[in-house]
Image (cartoon, rainbow, N blue to C red):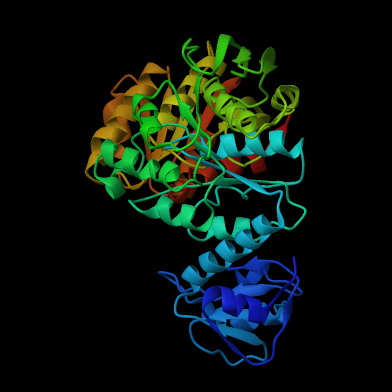
Length: 465
């Protein structure tokens, strides 16, 4: 969608330096993603200064720069106090303009686990109804969310947003940019305790989504999580609940849940709008809850029940390193790889081991776990608890990576062969050495502790079968 540099300046409270320009390309914060007609935001990070890459952005085709200080390049420049805040301000103005034109609704998802899969499922459901925008990967913070909003055009019918938080007030800020027309709360878990102090602190932060929703907006709540269900008191619009356990009081629920040999779930979907059989294409029976949340959000928007069911039955995993099941031959060994290495917390670890136990029933099992980050004082006991999960899932070999990873081994105990890797390359070598015919390998950990690199190395060295 075309915007003038002057419009961007007015929307961000900035000052245009030089001649006006027409932005016809994407808005970017990475100069490597700049292209003809783009606008580059020169953000300052902890380890780099985006202003140092402004010239590269212009050489790649950027016609406007949002900067905190003028840079020596020939290009329209919008001078602002804070480029990150300006990005949010621009996204807010952009969405407001699109809403005034009519026809665009926003569905926002938060929770300690399951956000990305629910977002992916919602995207596929809503795309069956009309043009839909959703984040790449897990673009769910003060940078990723505005960038997603800025990809919408006057033709966009639905926008799915994932809202994450690493501390109080983060989701409130995101809703100030894009107040949702439907708010979906998945669960309150034990992720990132270091940023919140307690599970109650996490619940309060997640509740900011409901508090920031548009007046009268429908709210979708997980009936199986008491902390989420308690958020109904904050809703100003209708509340729709869902239950993967089949609780009869829930509006949308799953009955007769069974899993196939790849731990993909089949169930009967019950909703006020109808009843139908659903077979999920995503790996992990725990995704039943995410499918119900996505269905509930779509139904709250008025999407026809038949459209929801058809889309769910055809849905697949869209984001990388999210319960990605691969049948490979690696160094002559036929193996099954479960790549769930994009993120990790206590709840998602439990789900990962449940999938490993189901898929690996009667087979050798290897787990490659990098450490879980942002747990604060809870890190050691939480890692030990995950180690216990590994043992209970029947893991034969546990390869761990990261500063707090030894606590995994403490929890797993002497009944599990433990390998402490010194770095990613060492973890890759250890995984290759431990492979045997018909084994199942689970790779999981926080994004910035790099278990995903082990999963990618196994895929690169292997051949699909």
